[in-house]
Amino acid sequence: MQETGNKKFCKKCLLSEMDEGTYFHNLYEYIKGLDEDIKAEQKEYERRLSLCKECDNLIDGMCRICGCFVELRAVIATNYCPNMDKKW
Ligand code: SF4
Image (cartoon, rainbow, N blue to C red; front, side, top):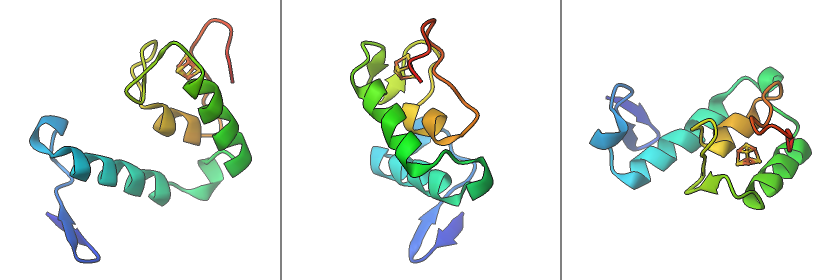
């Protein structure tokens, strides 16, 4: 277990061992903690996510082509959309 502020989370838990709230909290903490050097610019991040939101391959926050949570995939500057027509 690790503590952040007054919340505890396990760095070794599988998704199936977490409740949904904990999982998404950890996901956003992970994004926040990424090195700024590897992150896409905020405007580019938002542009990517707006394209994902219009895409038929987005299901429950995940891209059905690559299996990634799109918010995680889109935050990395060098990543790209895995669709054949590369939406971003
Ligand atoms: S990453 Fe590309 S294919 Fe996947 S949901 Fe986003 S726009 Fe669609």
